[in-house]
Image (tube, rainbow, N blue to C red; front, side, top):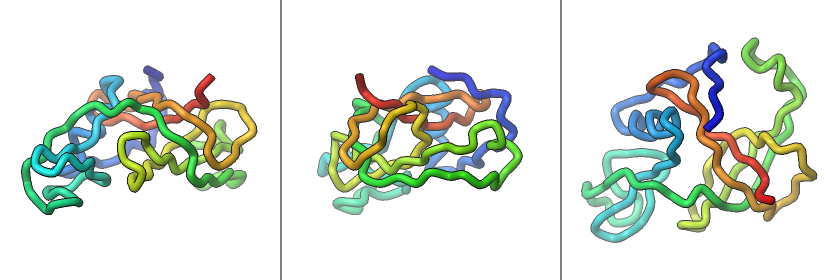
Length: 138
């Protein structure tokens, strides 16, 4: 797990998303999983995105997937990111379910292309909020 506690920008979890951010802060990558239909749900919400049931649990995912899309940011839009520019934000299609795309910052210095295999790296910002980073698989 990476510790980025010196960052000032911190997300504000809501009732549905708080377990996601807390899991990342504790080095885990978890998503909601429906006990009724077996579908994963992203972003976090009170009902399943498949069957619309309420029988959701937070479960670990493998943390692997492939880059679907990306953008390289060269402009400083917030003071917390001055030392990161340029940085790449990727949209990753997770292996568990191909219709779930999860964003995060790519921390590997690699040539990026659609289909690049990546692995999740949860990072702590505070005790209750983490950040999802992605690194290229070896």
